[in-house]
Image (cartoon, rainbow, N blue to C red):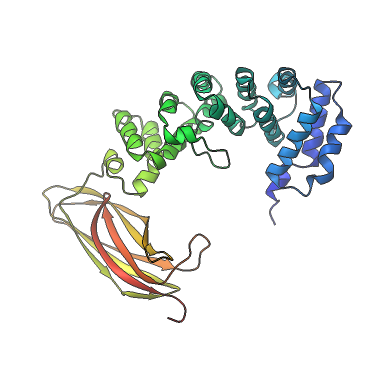
Length: 367
């Protein structure tokens, strides 16, 4: 049985933190710190454990944030200390709780921390509170020699970073972070480029046209590494069949592809599967590159339909050629969807455009 995730932070983590702070500051009350943390630690989950350590730090470190920041920085390996890894999640939380109003020192400390454990969680309250000043400082990190710092510039500013607080102003208007991402499109580290792509993919969920335009501007004469980044950034748009996003990678709108859809059965008994075949004929006078996807419009409880795009395959079809694709889509119990009986719809996409469709009925239970 795998080790529970919460054990990434344990009593040993708390003691290591206490020891590091004691070496840094002889007046640190190690016993009081551990008395605040250890009695209830085993009852808590991962983030709660870290928050408990952070709360104990807030009780036991100096009230003066600047003084406390100096002590924490001395705990880091880059400053001669020994604390790294998951123990530093509590440092993130401490800085976020006590550092507001001390923007420059807080960001400087998070920058020093991130080579030893990501600071993407700690940085976000400062962007939320003082976005313009914070982004001005963070922009300078795009040229830092340490790739962890450069990655923090992109990962920490992601509008919808998983597991972290959302940045609503950047969700609404991501324009201020585009120069940060642009500056690292050709970063030498894949670790950084992947983060840039993920940030752009976040933005695409709220501003699809803006990201498609961004990709179009930066794909000309792009290196293979940059092209990978731009395509990875466009993955949500491509999956949804966004026309310009598809065109950016050679899948232009098709007018000369003739599609015929054949559904094996118009009624499916749950659990079961939808079997269908798609015939695509190129009626034009030149070879066409086609991304064939399909959309299932699922019945909702109230009777309306909600679409979900499923990836098909990329095809190269010569003039006059016909290609037949056969697919089977299962309808089985899953945790992420509740199926309702009634009319559903299947549609075929070619480079983001609907080229064929058919209705079918899903029967559940004793119907």
